[in-house]
Amino acid sequence: MSTTVTPGGPVRRLAGLFHRRPYLRLAALLSAPLLWLVVAYLGSLAALFAAAFWTTDDFTGEVVKQFDLGNFQELWNQSVYRTITLRSVGVAAAVTVVDVAVAFPMAFYMAKIASPRAQRWLVIAVLTPLWASYLVKAYAWRIMFSGSGVLSWILDPFGIHGPGYGLPATIVTLAYLWLPYMILPIYAGLERLPNSLLDAAGDLGARTFRTFRTVIWPVAIPAVIAGSIFTFSLSLGDYITVKIVGGKSQLIGNVVYDNIGAANNLPFAAAVATIPVVIMVIYLVAVRRTGALDNL
Image 1 (cartoon, one colour):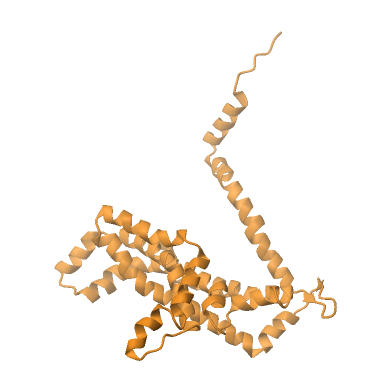
Image 2 (cartoon, helix red, strand yellow):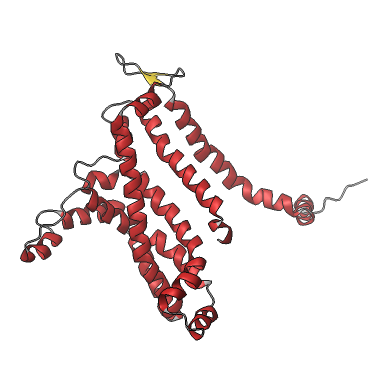
């Protein structure tokens, strides 16, 4: 007695199982990215937090893998690290404010004024800077802020010196680097705003500022917050721009970089690196409690 094997039988049964149980299909689709998230991201965070409680032997330079709170005690007791943390938060907040001020008019024009054909070209124009190297853009701003750069050349006839290197240069450079991450979320949020609401506000006699405050801003605020998550977090942990245009300024990223490289103190670098992680967790919890992200 012979047994007939139907070609593709197991495949068909598996497909039928996925068809009858949609949650299995969803689990199969999410398994690879979730595995990558757990291993690459959450695993690296776990290793970071574990290393923050280790110490470095002063004589041999070897990492001592024993639980110790000395790194965090030093961060708390040394006022210089509190100053660097506040400075880093201030720079990240300033970059976010600058990006919102620049991105909002651009995004509003793209979403509500430009023609559909112009919208596509404007989106391409916004994305184009992302194709260039981070270092190329940062060094271009270094040239502009130098004593013989473009800014000094423009301001010299008026008897004004350029800002040179420092925190202002850092804020401007970071604001330029992360501007697309603010424009695109606001553009997507304003695109969902019905034109009929703007027309109704005008018909009811609302002036421009009142229309912005009561109609446009409530719709756009979730998108603004979504963009601020990118600009704030990326600025908070950046260290390359500060090295290039920051002069003698020190931010959290620089402290982490210096302790990994020159000081060869990985545990203390890990302890410092937990500061922006904690700040971002607090920021995300605060934003979520406002309910602004529910409409994204």
